[in-house]
Image (cartoon, rainbow, N blue to C red; front, side, top):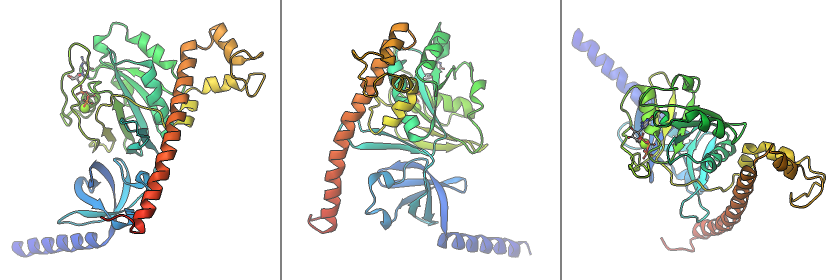
Length: 346
Ligand SMILES: Nc1nc2c(ncn2[C@@H]2O[C@H](COP(=O)(O)OP(=O)(O)OP(=O)(O)O)[C@@H](O)[C@H]2O)c(=O)[nH]1
Ligand SMILES: [Mg+2]
């Protein structure tokens, strides 16, 4: 009797599995390594690869970590990804080789934590860059100043970082000493996704371990002399906590270039845009024109000259990279077209 019911359960399980295999399923990309994907599905990670439908797609249509995808489930091997669902946000940056090609970092992050340590790592300029990328991508930027236990003057940095943009909120924490962690609870809400970006050694993985209460991610010491990290996290990884919060850990970035982020920059520096709109002449270059609201604001101290210069520089960098990207995508399109026609041997 006992044996029988066990066999029945097994049979039922097998039938369920078969049923699931033949149906299209929905899951979420947990990590990507070259053309190997891992999908978070039914509480576990399963291996997957792209279906043939992606052959003609442009690179930004390929799945990235955080993407919701539909796929054909394969219990005993690679599942096959059919399509990428519409993204609510998309974080991207130009590649470090400065070829104008974009690197697609993460999709569907509700919040982007801009993680910066309160040591040599802290940079007003870099935080403004990350904020522009997050806003451009449709994700809410939150600045997390880590290692507050090592800094005598954390409040001064919080105040300064708050002047970067009225779109960013700033928190100083110490994941190791448990300082300021309560303030982060409002972001770690079931169903929400948080992506952590920042330099190597800033404390991204340490923060994840502190929040989850487990040593999920590997961490390692920074170099004494300049507080630089050792690139401990080597790939982007989506994790789901027991209460259903998704966290994306990423490898530390050396720099974050500006490309395709004009609106993000304008959003970050929306106060400057507002000033520009108040100039007497609509084509004011804010140099010698009379009735220039930007110059007046700098003279009165309402706008810092450094911040205005940063806004101009980021915009100029973005325009340069945009021209390069356009040129490259023209070539890439021509190449794809030619290879479809069989003009290139395999
Ligand atoms: N004192 C102090 N040290 C911290 C804090 N947070 C992280 N650290 C230390 O900083 C070092 C680097 O932390 P990680 O979490 O590995 O940094 P990461 O940002 O994940 O670095 P990558 O994976 O290389 O991008 C470790 O030795 C941590 O213990 C903190 O709040 N206070
Ligand atoms: Mg890490």
